[in-house]
Length: 171
Image (cartoon, rainbow, N blue to C red):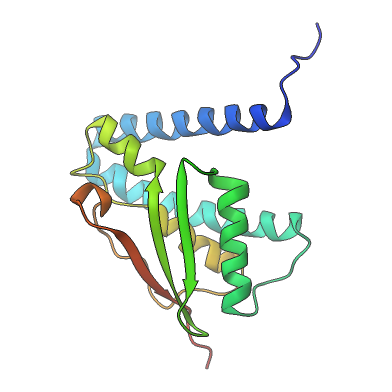
């Protein structure tokens, strides 16, 4: 049997769509079995751990060491979004440095928001995207000063998805 001739970019898109389907089905199964509160809590916890692993693997793949500055961290966040999450037009995110310890994240379009609206859980879903970034920070050696707030999807509430994140100050 011969290998299917799927170009690399199409294979990558297929793998992402399959992963997103798995993720949505997992969330729905946990929510149905144990309630949405448990599904939200576990989703956020898992994404923090997954973010750490992803950051380690991404740094290794890029042959980089731990982040040393806010610019290093933003570069890693951008690289992580394009390599691990998805590419436009499914997600459009900007990371803008505010000073040497903080930056603003602005999400214009979000595949998670679109999918939770379609699934009918937007009013009860707690955004876990920033928990993944939280994990990326720990994995890159530049932890955040505070855990991401537990809150519903801002876009689903009709608000802009903008957050300010700060790096933990070293003593």
